[in-house]
Amino acid sequence: MGVMTKDAGADKAQTAMDVGEMQMDAAQAQGGQPAEDVRAGEHAHEGHAAHHHGHEGHHHDKPMTPEEVVSSLLVLGQVALNAGDYESAVEAYASVLQLEQNEVALYNLASFRARGLGVPQDYVEAARLFHQAELLGNERAGMLCAKCMFDYLHEGMDEKTPANLYASMAVFVSRVYPEATDPKQEVSRGLTAIANTLISKGERDQAQKVLRAAEF
Image (cartoon, rainbow, N blue to C red; front, top):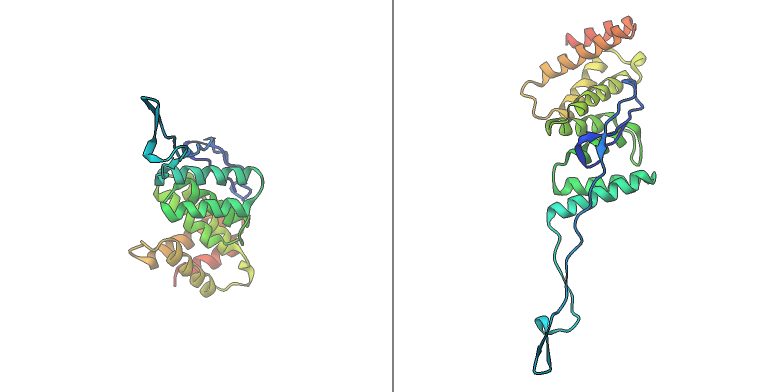
């Protein structure tokens, strides 16, 4: 599943899941500004050198703003991603989320979760992160959230009963859509959507089982 760079106005992403190849053009993430180096000035008054703040050669670093920290972390994540160092990329993007809800960090962490890159594969957690990115305006993340829902329910479906499927979808809804005002309706809607996808794939027997689960 693809990843995003900092500028969500253009994107470049590629998904390895059943929805097919999805491209997102994104501008290269820009780093935060380096801390400003303030040097002591020298004032010539009758041959006397006055030192800025009283210390010659002493440097004062300007603290980075939260926005600069986020920008720098996004660059670190992108650099790690380009190097194939997914664990470091995960760490950088997770650090961003400790500071703010950030669309790029959410989308990329969701992609890593869905594919098991740098972290254990977890379709439910991936869907939760994609949904959060969707709430920030990323429509493609909403599509991939739905794809994760399908993959989560479809795993081991042959062995699952309608009751198992309903219980699994209830867990999914509670973790991914905690804001849902009617969780039971959300479960039914999700199961129906999965059944329709199965029908489109020609898996009619599985679709019937899912529809029975939706009736619970």
